[in-house]
Image (cartoon, rainbow, N blue to C red; front, side, top):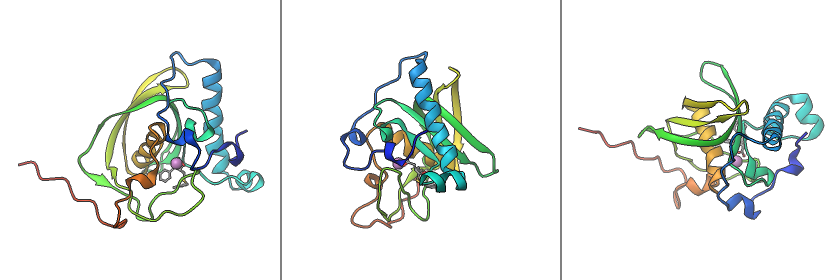
Length: 183
Ligand SMILES: O=C(O)C[C@@H](Cc1ccccc1)[C@H](O)SCc1ccccc1
Ligand code: NI
């Protein structure tokens, strides 16, 4: 099983690289890695297992965070209706997004960042993401709310972007401007 010692921390160069596309159909090794990433999220969300193995709860994980420079992400998060989105994707791609933006009131954290970095992290409010599942199915997901935020955080990891790169400086709590009215 993956534990926190498998997760690289900020300063490690892999977190600032652009990850490589996974060749499809995925190899047995890539499938095994993505399954382990999904298992980590499940374990991290189980209070007993998390306590036993010292796991930080996570709702998403990107392969570069376990020092694998490949475009693979795992997400395990509930949507507004309480539906669990529990998915691993090869080569996820944000194919469209709303003009409208959103953000988490308490800001964001990261399993690869062992410090609090306060500030507003602007994210698109609604996004469409395409990718290939562990079963080799090409899917397109329409996302909003927390799932949309998590997918954007994870896809950023595939492009070497950390959440705090998106915090406005010098005013980290400056409200993002609303989209211009299209007349
Ligand atoms: O480091 C990661 O990529 C995992 C992050 C993902 C994330 C953080 C904030 C906002 C969106 C995605 C971890 O899940 S951080 C821990 C966490 C747990 C529950 C809710 C929010 C953050
Ligand atoms: Ni992160």
